[in-house]
Length: 210
Image 1: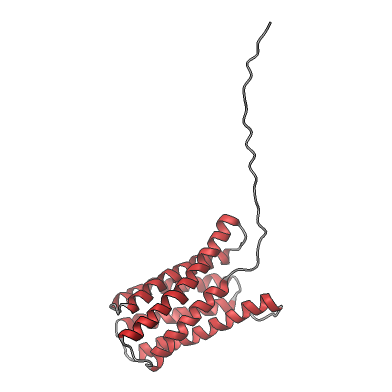
Image 2: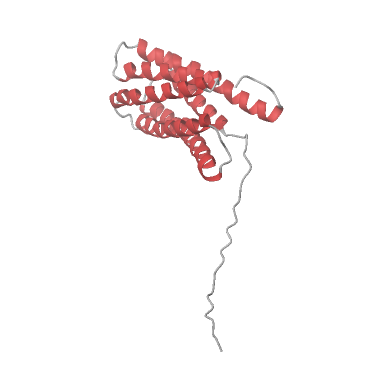
């Protein structure tokens, strides 16, 4: 009689869940959040009203943390998770948008908290160098992608960081501060338009340039 050894095998079934690709990218969060922040900071820098004081700086800083800061950070992480984990978004330009808006959100956390505590403006001038190049990167990416409305946002951001560099070091005042306020205000208005364009195009079937 011959005995045969039997081996026990464990079969593991792996179920792969694949989500459909979505066109509903939450870029309107980033556009409106940054636009709102710019329309708070810009007119104050441009017209000097309300005058800076501990209470005004606290209020403006708190707005900076939540609107441009949290909204951009939420948008950026949402896009990156959607691209890398769940594959519900695709496209090189969207990857760039996720990276850039996440970084802009974090930097607005810092800007808002510094304003709330009335910190020194001069280190912000050195920050402008890095974010000038980040803005230039965004312009290159979206210009090459043929998305001129978003490329125009980054044109405004380049202007913001050039003028903010001089304003942070109190160079050519008050014109550098007023130039910063002008770029903040104009770019903020364009961002509000892009918010309208995204929402109306998706929800109402309109075809506004985007």
